Figure 1 (cartoon, helix red, strand yellow):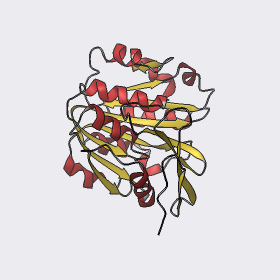
Figure 2 (tube, rainbow, N blue to C red):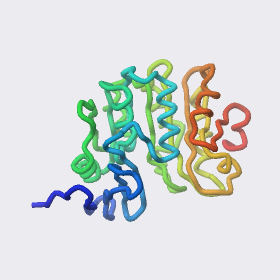
Figure 3 (spheres, rainbow, N blue to C red):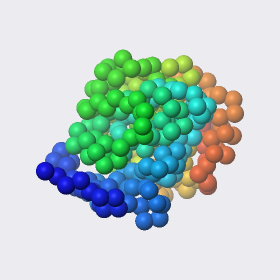
Figure 4 (cartoon, rainbow, N blue to C red):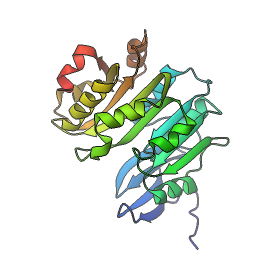
Length: 264
């Protein structure tokens, strides 16, 4: 029988599907917060006592898009493709209690490990589907349409090809409710080949696409994350100012012709 870790102790599990250890360890700087790592690389940050606190910059930007889609307190439907430690699902429940959420996670062992050691806030309505993000779109569509669809599976240039083409984005966007947003986290390194290809694919099927990131990322000389926001309709009035001002800082929002240099 596996001994349950005590508060403050690291918790670990070998993930056979990934071929690496997963661990959750206390954040030494944020009391009550935990860090999920896989193979020694940090993946997610969870503040169990304050799930409305989003630590990583790229996730904070995604949370800001959620806030723009629907005011705090308004229940939404959210689809998370790539669950991680469910940081964003926790944020949605904390800020919009009673929201209906679905998460698709490829690795069952990881999903079980996270929920065992980092329980969701009480009352969270979350259905976890084990499977591939693209092949499960038909399955999860029954719980839609969704106000926000978040894709967070890309890390580096070796992206799964079936998740990195225009066909996938068209299928994901079809699950959006009117006024909903498709939000994609893209981790990449110079010369940002993955960012360029994904923005081009999104722009080919969505009416509006914008990027939220640090200004240095636009130079294509540094590794990091960009958050791409895709809409089926027009860009809402005031979103540019709102999302820019919401931070984290320094930050920039680029759309329209200004995005051409990053999506060729």
